[in-house]
Length: 384
Image 1 (cartoon, rainbow, N blue to C red):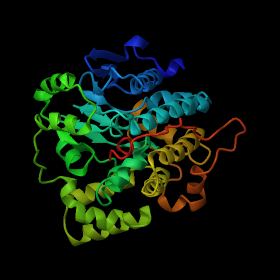
Image 2: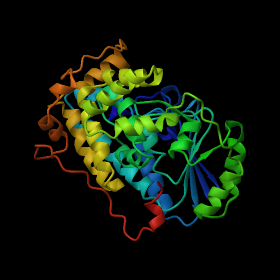
Image 3: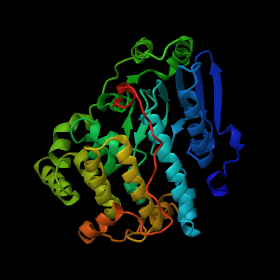
Image 4: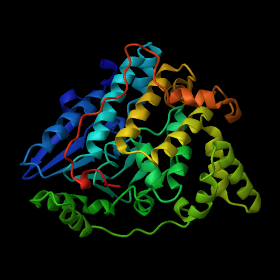
């Protein structure tokens, strides 16, 4: 798995661990790569959270990133490299491990406090949004930009996006829209907003807490929190238009509704949203919308099992090779001009979409097997 770990940082230093009384502070430590999640990091986090759950001396876990990012996503360039080398199973193994970690965090019985002081994208959302407390700051930038890469919002995004108010999750997942800390708090992705200059004090206060009681942890964070003001142009101020358009049944219907709104009034936000959708992979848009819609009625485990099927189909590239093309255009050649195939929404048939949700036709392939999580308190599975 060497290609998943090429970082310039020793593997045992990619997640730094501090023990402070009853708290454990985990720091994602690949600052030059904006803390992009590697296979080594996923494995280490899985090991740490598994041990903390049964360790009575650990009462809460704080997760943060070193540098200007919390975590800018998964190591997608390594995934693209694995596909090019005809080693899609390496990529599948990474996703299997990553989604298992996401499930553990979504059902973790002790408080996890994520300090989202910087960029939070893709895989970074997967190691934070499933936790009990998500602390945004004025430096936070959240996005799920997968449709522009020929992928889809994964790491359990099909569980948490449809649980945002109205159809805001569809908007965020399909367009890859960037949200700031105030917007994260307003829509529910963040539970608190704390100015970055107060994070050190917050961390010290959390480390003094001899408790796993969510209400007490929340009260501690409240002491450092502020209520930020949404900027006038915020997408969250346009929930009426978002709900009207992104509630439509198909991607084509969503686009048509937005274009109808654009004819009624001049609005740069609507025009920008239309452009974002038209730039994204048509295949990605269609499978993403279906994934988010199915996630409305599923629990976190069911969402991750389905997403694993989808990710394996993306890696195999039998229906579309848009993921490879997206990585080329945005990450490798950086010409930002992907040539999607199929090139139009109308060319992506229902049968093609259905393939992504079906079992992989390979004797050695198995559906994602998540660990049994018996006797969990209700609070461990209702964090959103």
